Image (tube, rainbow, N blue to C red; front, side, top):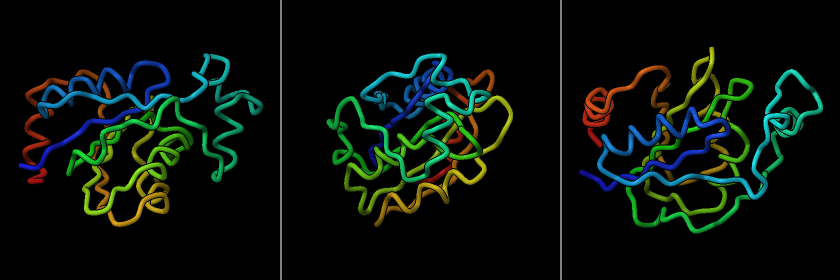
Length: 159
């Protein structure tokens, strides 16, 4: 079995909860991807066209800076990336993270949380930010999640 890392970005805590259960199921520690400037609830108001998240997602080239660039990516073969779905794709901070490290030869498995949408175009929106890695769509991790269910999913990936 390849050594796996669970890296995630969580704006409201929902994705963090899922990531921590997945990390336990995989047998690894989670790594939180943090923005240099944390998001406030006003920043996340998707109904406000002038909110921070709306402006960021309106510009696909925007890359919010990270709080740190010390993720232990080089130590892992498989990296699970978790994030909330924003506008049917991953938040641009995930692109920032992918563009900040070398993922050559690694397998990236996406997982996400959302109040109502699926993974949508998340994988296609991230492929341009990483080269030399295999990206798998993964799955949505909404609702009540059991460690056993996630362990079965992980083992079923045959990584």
